Length: 226
Image 1 (spheres, one colour):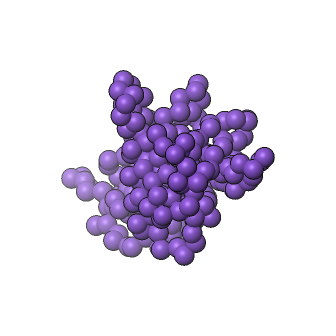
Image 2: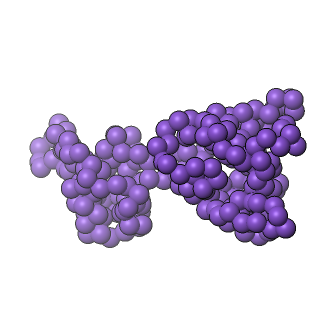
């Protein structure tokens, strides 16, 4: 028998040890015992039981009674609830790297596929954005929600979006700007869909150790066209 509890706690709010336990179970196709988890995670069995109880109560993990054809008390095993999103970002990052690898190897410079993907993404975000905020302020809220911590700044009369944190930083090491091109397209697509007065003329990755710059320009400026 299994528990069919509806998840009552968001996985992203879990503490580090509880996330480790859940991430471990999400890597396994078959239910596992407390003892096996204790050995795999190098945690005391009581610690594992404590976190399993909390995860089960939250509906993130299910108890499974082992079916055995031998006498004796059946063991209680644990498995991750199938509808819970992965708490490890490894599956997503692996998928992203595969997509970036394909875009990176595309020799056709006349078809900026990365930017086109980004523009379609930006338009889809704009279509679902019910915010009343307009223009660049709306873009800042969007990119910040995506993990690109940013702010608007002006230097010598030129407006920029200063991006001070990017969750894809390690994917740009070595000068690969493929993910940056996707983000450039996303910002352009979003602003165009919202009929903003500005667009992003260019995105300059890592102009400083902790800084990328998205240069803003009037949407009607012909110099911003590709």
